[in-house]
Amino acid sequence: MKYSDGSILNALRYAYSIKRNINPETAGEYAQITDEIAGAPEWRGCGDDAAACEAAEATVDESVAASHADGAACDGYEDAACNTLTLTLSRPAPYFHTVMSLWVTYPAKEENISAGGENWWNSSKFQIGNGPYILESLEPFVSATFAPNPNYWAGVGKVDIKFSYITDSAVAFEAYKNNEFDIIGLAAEDLQVVQADPQLSQEAKIYPGSCTFAVMFHQLKEPFTDQKVREAFAMALDRQTWVDDVLQGLGSPTLTWIPPGYPGHDSEEHRWGYDPEAAKAALAESSYGGAEGLPEIKLTFSDSPRNRTRYEWLAAKWAEVLGVQVVLDPVEPTTYTSLTKDIATAPLAYILGWCADYPDPQNWLSVYWKTGGFGERIGYSNADFDALVDKADVEADPATRAELYADAQRLLTDGAPVAFFWNNVNTYLVKPWVTGVVTTPQDSGFPGNIDPISLDIDTALLP
Image 1 (cartoon, rainbow, N blue to C red):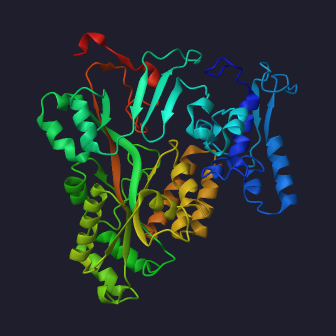
Image 2 (tube, rainbow, N blue to C red):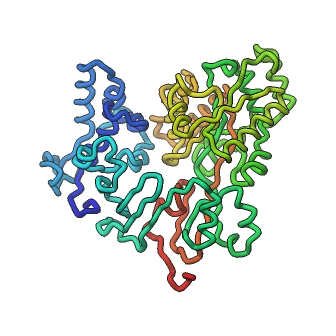
Image 3 (cartoon, rainbow, N blue to C red):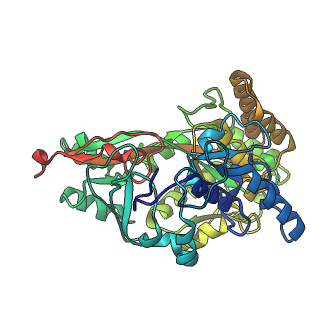
């Protein structure tokens, strides 16, 4: 195998990347995603205990081993015969092969990371990989250009790609209509115009996505320490109207965590759906006795015109159904992101989504909601839930495993830690001269980005 620059790509490169992700000094947000590797959770969590860190690191070194096919030791990154990677797991993990397809295993070059310093990832100079395209240039938050990788194992791409970062959907839409872009994301506010246009409607690609969005309730902060309050706010959400009026149809209401089309989706779950009378009753049954007894409730969001409209709708719905006057709390986007990453700073109530990393219930349930995962940022921790997913994660029988995850998802919903809200749809406009687009629910950025090697331009159709 080769990198895009023609240099040797061997098993030691993969071993380095996997261990770097686990290394507590890296402090990566996805470090726990490979905790099945023997020694990984111990190394990640060794803290200031130098002896414990050293012992755990040694275990990981043994668990992530590169070698020749005959077991002989590798001789550095230039050893072309170093083609075998052996991983030792601490427990069975039927889903682990899918984890290995994630970005945490991408073989970034150690010397490039060292040379680039803290911002190595923000420069095309140090982004030498083995994917179908080469990052030729990068102007952060402005544009990036890509060229086909001549050394890609599955063939060479047919077109160059330029990706532009445009946060104003109206600007992107006008540019698309002027043929300045071949592909753009289709915003909700432009949907009716597109559907009414005979040409644009033919260029729209709308298909199910891989994300679930929910209103997060911080369970360690009043009043959402009280489950009845959480139930009331969940049942006061008119999800269908939200999808129809606010999202302009670009979504689907949901009352469960795993989206349709993914293993583990529960189509029978109907608890905490829109029911104004039940919502009022739940609030009355809470320890606060009703809206008048509640403390101030802030609804925090990343400030933008679109988000202001959305959160105003949400606050108005809660006022209408529950009589609760919610205070809107717009914050600067980077501040919002930072706040939501820590249990100590996570807002009282806010909307957040989760998109599938890989198509397995373990990614939706164990990774997100098990104690120590992302759900703990809002104070969710349930020993019974943990026990169920721990059993499911190591179960070899598919049917038994599926039922354990189903039980865990039902238990999660029992406690109403969040108000499940909607599932996304992928929405794009694609010019007719763009061919070879292969869509998947996990597309992000543009349709076909999971398999861009087939993209092409039919020059006969160009204006």
